[in-house]
Image (tube, rainbow, N blue to C red; front, side, top):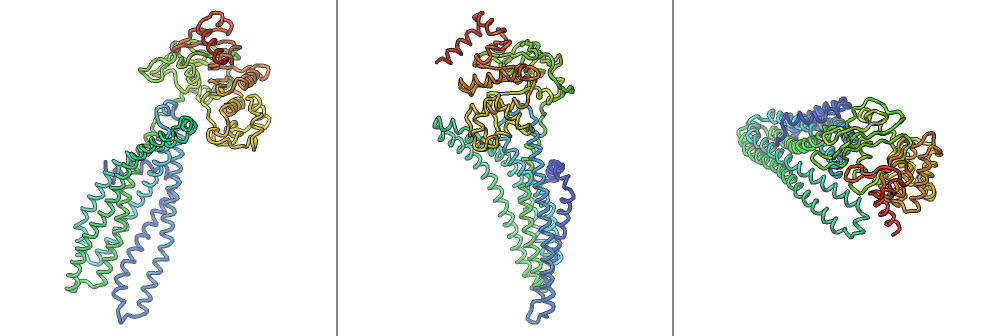
Length: 592
């Protein structure tokens, strides 16, 4: 790993430039103000010499008064320079950090579903929160890298002006400062990568612990979950302390080397004063310059550490930003579903080399038809839903065949227009920590009548009206203030409001009791029929409860990714095959 070098700085600025560019004028003003900020310190050092030489038993009051007013004037001038320099700097940095977080969050929304399957949510949260903070700190340190050396150079110039002989003593130890910066920077970046990785693991452990409270309590897993978190936190602490040791070792080392130089200066200065080469005022001016030079050197050391941390964070963030997004190569807008959906010899596996989840599937679903897909777990039923929504693509190294809507391969439709014709109600419930209304409208505007109708169809109107604030009631994170059945009814209402042409039910009534299931199923049947809408809804339903689909136009029975039976309920029951066995098993389960 490299410490601060022009290459590192160049790379960091390349990361950050797009985010600072909109505010370049403010950033330029902040940088410009570092010039008078450093210059004022230089003049203050110069005045120290005259103060020491003037303040004698025979000093003139007016001369002392002029020096005092000069120092006061410099302090007054320093106030706006320092305030606007640091305020504008923080303003630009915080705005840039907001833009970075927005870009990362926007990127995550555009990544394919497969990315989230293979990555921890806690690690991604850490990227958004912690890595952007480190990168913002790196931007601040980049300004420090400009300001602090400038201040140190002014102080060095004043030291030369006071006595260049004494200044040579400082130059002797300069290589030691450089060595400290290089060594500490190298170690910090190496450790920081591990610190951020462990922080991601810890964030994920926290997310699991909070999200799994019901299971944690039901199985008395509090100690187990706490121990998991404690182990992750201990690993994080160990790597954090390695970085802390490097950082905290660098600072006193810089001060130790400075003290070594200062000790040499004192001894040599005594000789210079004894021979009359310099006055006490010259020496005090030199010492003041030396003391003021130590602060920018210390801050430069800290900036060096922060830049290396930012570089490691930047590499992680921009690795995410460089990931390929969900492919959308379609150019045709699917404005209306007119005819049929066709699966033509579709074969698919989630990863190359894995077993086929769907094998040689050929299926036609005509507009207005209601089609149920049944089978044991792992038969490939939900994968069909994923492929229709293009959450996974058929035409990859993992699949073959094609899916067509109205005779056109779904790959040729734009992704947004394709998904617009579908309404999904999934067994994976997801609700926002927001009101009932916001959860079913999800950013769209609907009339009160439309919302009421959707809640009625979903069988949710009665319980919503009994909530403290009705549709304005907050339902908690993922709907924790509601029952599982109530949450599922809201997701059904959400789909109803969109009024899509094709309904996708992936165990849509799995969280409902038998009575509620019959009520909601009846409502869904009425809604999806031509009698209740201008055109019949096409329904594709994945079901374990076979009573929910026994009146459907077509039932597809799958096993190990293949269609093994197909027909209406009565036909399949008469055949006494796989469907008969599944139905018999389902009915026995309900009766028990």
